[in-house]
Length: 375
Image (cartoon, rainbow, N blue to C red; front, side, top):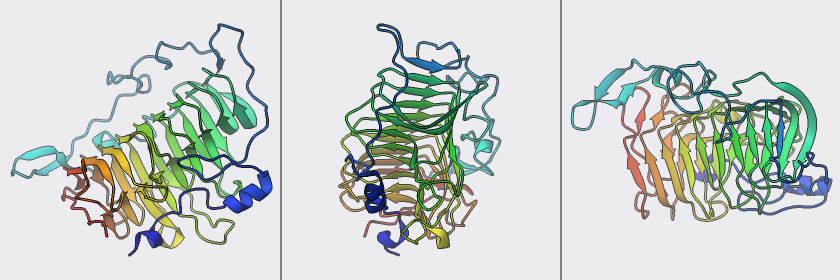
């Protein structure tokens, strides 16, 4: 099966419709266009004081709240211990049992993120913001239950311990030329049938620029291409229940838990996430992780210690020309398909690319995973 028939056409597939409605666009390494936005913004703080929009919660030095969980892992939900795995082990490459060759029944059973270890850790205060442009450097949004979406035109914005329910093209979007966005311990979701793309919604978190976004300990669902960016630090997230939909073009929108279109300038790190794409092949499934060379060569991506399941192929590996791609210690789950993805675990892996590493990746039943070479 060719890559183009199995994966998403990543970047804003309804550009023409969007431009016609909104009338203007912004360019970026991971998006072709987005509407410009009104000048509304959160209230600026007094000069010299931190920019904070919160429910009155104290912040620690690193922008988090509360104390480490019972497991002692920084940033884990207070009082919620990390799951302890008691899996059956199988022999490693040298015949010696190894924890990385453990058979896992579910993500949580082997210590991967799930609903217990992601999302807000505090009570939330309702905020019906609708579309909201954030234009204040250093803004901290904490403890909000947002009905709407955030469009960030500012540096060093933090969204933490917050829930976002969006009916926009995105839940949180970073515009070109800005940096330092962090989204931590939050839930980002949407209402199926209420989005702008014929009832569908496209991006939970999108990065239009060339700086890194951190997304950590987040519970993400519904959006077709949930985490969309060329560079970023995606860790300890639970992406699940992607909702398929027929887009305005009359086709099933292709879906991915994480997607990148190549041509990136920085590093993309995808580490210790649970990435589930339950979309059926007949409803537009693309990948759980889709590294596609749509905007340029794919480079400098780390895919490490993730639980991956679903899609046409569970992982699209960057294709010919991809360099600096490290895929290590991942579990390819069979919960949706015997091969993890409908057609298999991995496609378009460039084994000869400089700096490319494939090591210790296995199925959830313990079988080693051997990549399909790029064609």
